[in-house]
Image (cartoon, rainbow, N blue to C red; front, side, top):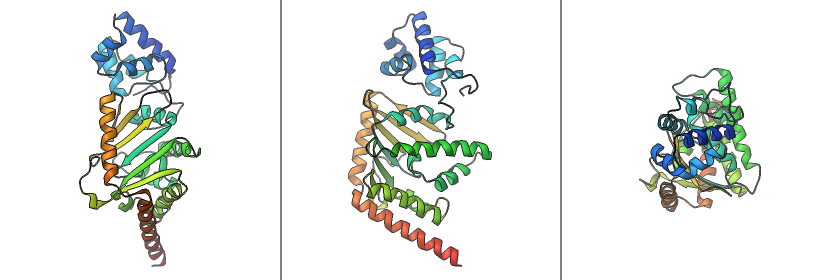
Length: 279
């Protein structure tokens, strides 16, 4: 885990990686092969443009004999509190000019309302103290501010129908959450697609994926499962994820049909919340 009270800048971190790599007599390409990372990723880390994830840092430590330096001194993210496996992705998200995300179970973080996000962060098998929950909530809501700029990033959000049907926080919370996404879709700030249950098996059924494109960096893919996430930069793997997304999109409802479903399900939640209030 990164040492939060002894931060290093990404530039200093990259300089140290370059120094140790050269001391070991390795080129960027040779190091990339030994640590199973792309040469481009190594170059971006050394230039201070990126940070490795924890697993990458551990492999750097092992190959370069760094005694845990690269894991223990991972650059922090300006004090923003997020899950360890998501730290690298948070930086990418803020730089992307296009994001395409598929959500199999929960509303993606950048689209969550405060009530929905608070319920998600209050649940789970690992209890959090109120202070930690509020820090995580603040970061999650800050992520949503990338949508304040109407033109960038472009966002495509594809949801499994299960996301709409799972009553996270109860009917009132879900009604508000679905209408928030509906408003973004109707204003054309984001493009919305739903993969209905009737689609059956589809190319992305196995899990969450986020695809990102940038002005001056190659595209990446981020996949996530329980307590873990991984950034993919190898072009062949990124392309596989892009193709899978396109295939799933072919099975999804159109933008207009998806907004109609969002509106219908939101109304169902509204009626359910009203009945609960009246009883």
